[in-house]
Length: 265
Ligand SMILES: C[S@@+](CC[C@H](N)C(=O)[O-])C[C@H]1O[C@@H](n2cnc3c(N)ncnc32)[C@H](O)[C@@H]1O
Image (tube, rainbow, N blue to C red; front, side):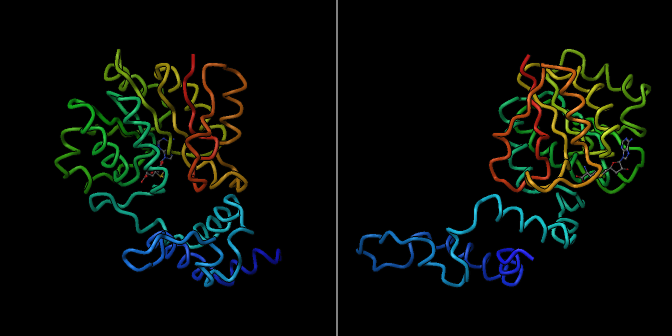
């Protein structure tokens, strides 16, 4: 085993406790009127056991991602307004920034699951567009609890069926005609399905807006097998209208590496 990896896996809590210490006490605890001393991280976080200067951002995110994925409780316990949702909070932050910038009138989400993520997008969108709608599609209807929510009743419309079924797309079309649309793909993550979804839903995206392909992997070097990445590559090979916006991966820890696709033409 890589000695760096074994050291990190041997003491990840020490490392992250140390990071928390740095985050919560960025200036140490000097006397009230003393100037803030400039100290290298290695000096102020000896509990990390390894000098942080030896660990790149990418390695740090990579090892954390391994831990994140090997302990599913990290994200399975996530709730939005009481509804389980499988979102990486760092990607939620980025998506919030995109929603704020793009100001969509409609967000299409494929892959509703329990409806927690539809409620999440709705709670952001309602601050931006008073009439904004979330159209969410799933082959299974598990929305009983989420649909009781006031916000769901006002903002969310659920469509029961496959995201690639022409009959479902026909139901969506009248609701998005002439609207500024953003699309979030979080249904079946196989390359074929993602490519098919991209070919269908990219048509509805105006220049400047995005289609976000979720769960392409986790952090850049860690590519989960059988994800949408090949579907994205095949889609991009046939168009110059979309580009991968890598600036949206600035936290390093993303479930959507290569998945933030911006319409540029
Ligand atoms: C990862 S979950 C979605 C998680 C949800 N967006 C959240 O953040 O909580 C994937 C969902 O895709 C649905 N699904 C699978 N194949 C589908 C298809 N062809 N069309 C629409 N939804 C599909 C599954 O039933 C499942 O609920």
